[in-house]
Image (cartoon, rainbow, N blue to C red):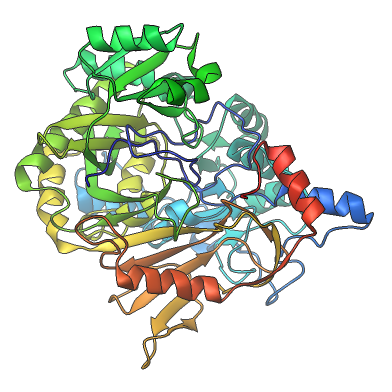
Length: 577
């Protein structure tokens, strides 16, 4: 059966089917632990706090560079050439791709990606000199030379990705690290997935340059209602819908019938938080289940369609919009996520779209991107496109004005190696230099190169309702299939860019020994060449083997039942029967 519309989260999504997508909003703070991927990493389970208070003794701190694994490598120091303060004289702007590549290979301004993990832009330091990562969770236990994680990390129950990032920016170890890597006269640049006006104030006070659109603008564009209206103003179609408010199920039925949407509906509120604000209403009982969240709120009421959700990232530059590769989404598989319809990764392969549909979708994304310029937006964004499998129509699913979880694949494509990774165009827009780009030529070339690559990644979540203390976990690095077909750790590695075949995988560990896992917690991300789903959308035998193999490498001790019950009471859910 064809998939229906869905609402995708950055790394965690509640029970729902597939429809017009929605990643976690940067403006809402949930009682649930935040997704950190899109940024797939979450804070320690609240059950740990409950268990600690009951036992009246400290809970073991999450594994960090301070207490487990190999000793941290020496903190990076300034490159001698950067420290010299010398900068080549430039008499003109950047005129072609060769000069753009040279500019970033000789860059002397430090650029820091700040987040719970380094997942989203991992490997970008291969192209951009001075690019590094500041993270709360250190997946390499100090062994990655460009990943910095503070040693002093007291137990905190994080409520959002913004909260983690703001804590990091204020941390004395982080401030000292940034100062150490910043040459005299330079202003360090900061990029991240989740930020807010508090982040802007912190950066302003500390003299950092936040190279992202304004938080207020991003919050404005995050609204599904705003996105829909902006898109319609330039002829970018959404799934047939009506934006309205309703007072009852009968009122919803009447308005939907008048708009020609039928009785099987998808209802969304303005801001999505890991898919918690997308509701599927086919009858009075499904409406009643979510009545309090629907009645009286501004809604986008859509016809429910059978569709293939397609993700694509893009960058709006002063010369136009550059569109990255299109990818299918890995959603709702019980082997990966406990959430029905929950986003759990992406696949990129040559025939993700046929030529005609790809051109249509590219035109849709470029038109929307160029329109965002009139709103004052510039830089990186992600669009979810919905392909109606019954009619072949292409619709806008959702705009996500931020870096996304799909970046992991976008930045290793043939187009990235032919020119530069897509995010480098974002850095170029915020570099403060003049440049020339033939956007049409780049888009044409990247479209031709779309048939050259096959990549996939999966977010592996803890799917059981039992809260557990992790005792053993697989390390970050490269894994291979041995002579018996078993997945085995091969070696530590910094990223997945050197994977050469489907027999190799890279696992980025999020939670390690000393951490806690609970229902929906992100254990880690597995990246590999090739596809992981069958043409019908099921997980392949290979994918299931990889998932089972990674799960088998974990060993954990369940927390006392009382702590588990308290955990679910605190986050507003109930244990599975």
